[in-house]
Image 1 (cartoon, rainbow, N blue to C red):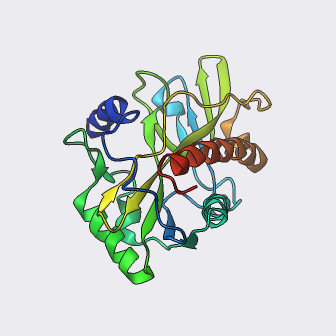
Image 2: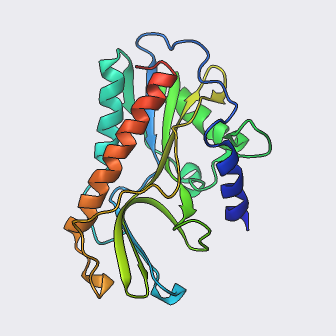
Length: 238
């Protein structure tokens, strides 16, 4: 029920959350922390005709995509004249990665305990901003009672019809340390995952290969970079 309520509110506010896009253009050479709460390697999620056919694996692929996410973000910031630093997460943030935001008003913002943790990290690392990258949780298809999150490969079978998609449920948001507030989030929409026509879903889902998962993760990363670029431009970081 909590997830359903969260998704309902997200649907209302995701495109127009009434938080400021920025508080003025960030100063040149701002110190920006990059904090990733997504898994190191892409995952494989499968939804079948019944819940007994569902599967969720984070062990098939061993490729370090988190490093690629980090490099994509830091390179954009550094090219724009900022100082970018990868920041290690802590247990509190990792355990709360699916529950980061407060939806009690149109000001969709980080929860107070999350702000406190981000401020601690910022003080320790001497940062002006933190870009937080996190897995989004969403329905496997419209009105679905099955939920998926993160990035990698997603396959869906309804009776004898099976399709493969690039799972790209990843979001990002900038936290402004000085103003103790989050800036406009990265645009995100459910159900627009790219269909992977090059991947044939095997009869036994255990036969899905690491290469297939990585192929889908590549598409998810490309989409993330495009949306990230838009977010950074909106808040005038680049």
